[in-house]
Length: 137
Image (cartoon, rainbow, N blue to C red; front, side):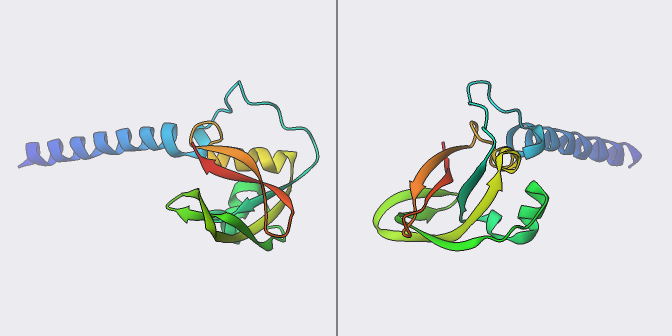
């Protein structure tokens, strides 16, 4: 009986270590290293359209240290499909526009794992404002 408990605990521990490692390397923003081929972010202010987890103030606070004052916005010509935006001419996606500085944009890039899971592209909102948005690779 003792051997079975030991084997079970060892197997469970091994699976936990492997799962933690895979999460850290593949999904965690903490294990992120910015790809060398991405250009540096010049100082300045940036507008970023968000439509998922970053619409929640606690998530923004965890990602870049403040909740900010996001503005409601809508992106025409797209629809949400799981974690991504896909082109859909007759639809739109509701979200928020964040105003961030270069350091906060780098924090958002880390959270979205820019270059690995997402790319950051320029789009125009229904209001005519040009913003950045993250789209799945």
